[in-house]
Length: 252
Image (cartoon, rainbow, N blue to C red; front, side, top):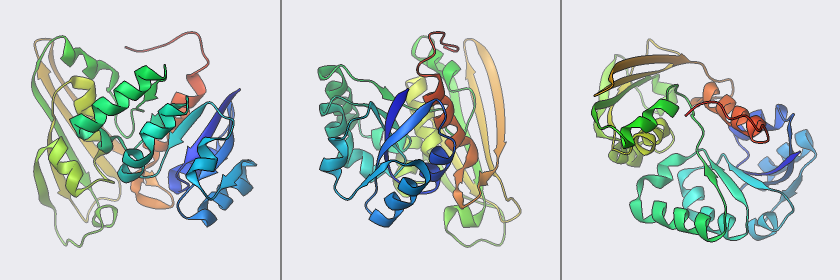
């Protein structure tokens, strides 16, 4: 059974802990130790107060469910300790220098870094962008004011630009745009809207290229305890973890 170490014990961490089935949580770490203790009580894992003790524990893969800053701070050490890593806060990889460092550390230690599909569909097929260029790659995201932590009494656009710029202003909300960019091999355009009339996160993908064109609209429910987090994003991590030991791989 796959043994995981959970880095970050917030909303997604709790969902992972409650749905552990074909994997087991052996170690948990959070900057706020009390949060780690909560996951410890749910999963039977060992909670650690120090990252060095956590990363030295016996498990196979680190699942990051913390933040962009946590990835930047800990990813190289995770790989150097001979552990694979699942990165939820993929916005950390917008920096080419850091992304190359992570790739080099993974190769040096014969490790893998996994990026879940998160809150959208179609990520697998975006990989064709590295073989045949896209003429259009646009993500239009609409969220409630509560999800974005701002006040608004009407629908309005709060950002238009590239994914690597959007993630700097909204590091907890548009990680999907970075995942799109990495899969496609080009920086996606992003339009971010806030709308007090919506209570769900809406992602619209507009994709055009030599292959034709695709439009995908995903309306997903916020996680029950955190409106800034998509429930689908948490489920995508669970799906990734549960299929890792399956010898049959489905999808591009």
